[in-house]
Length: 389
Image (cartoon, rainbow, N blue to C red):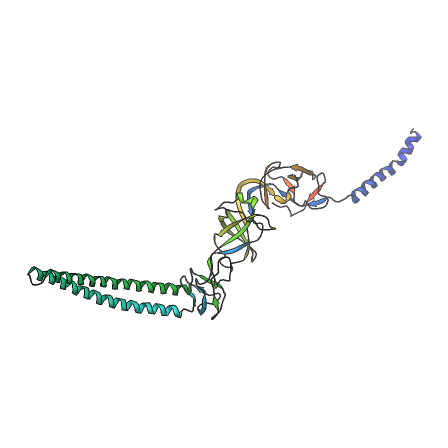
């Protein structure tokens, strides 16, 4: 027979079992749902070490000239307009120069007079030399004295000297013409290269003056050669040592959204810019491999450059945003628990970081690090369809 205690236990056993099942059911239905996180895999690919500009760069023309006539004066002829394309050596504007033209005409007239006088003097010299030769012949025959021959020879020499002096006047006249023409050239402004007129300072009748040393004045004409453009961008001095001419770069323009243009570093400034209240930077020039064809690329556009100074191919990499402070990641174990792992990194950029040790190819790590409750030791579930590769 069962003891009284056994009877009591057997009587309450179903109740106890029911309470346990109820507690389990309450825990099951009220337990916190596992976190859903976004995962990504450690995979092989290319990692590039890059340097970017600290402030916006600027699209510039390879040739740009702020032109002013060498001499000051009143604008008599303005032969171009803003936006007009011009050819090299084309006249852009001309200052009033009637006085210089008159000087050239006077020099031309003086040249004609000098040539006539020289012709006359040289003909007289030829005649005098012939007379001196005949006098020598007559002296040999005894028809003229030695004194008469000397007079003829002296007269011939004087005439020849007069001829040479008259010829020197021709050279002086040519020099006066050259001087007058040089003055005229100073009153004419010509295009030094093919380009487009960006701006004009001055109108007909106004006075144009060259800039004195140390006193900047607006140029008469701003000429741009827009067939060749590059990007000038400031790079922080701490990154300058990694940049060399010829390195590959990527160019983005604020005015042309969603497109990246290939380029190469063509120049690194040999000095550091010290601008008050700004970080010290080095100016770097990046040339387009192929400038935008369909888009209207304009001088002055703001631009950013990303210069690639090192590349590692076929290395294990992870997205850079998955790294925690101290070079750690949250590793997703097979049982769904997150584990904190320390990794050794190599090259890195904003997108990817090279992994030297700490992970294997195919390992899954957490992407959504900013999600509340995501930390080592918690159980999580991957978000379906959102794994990043």
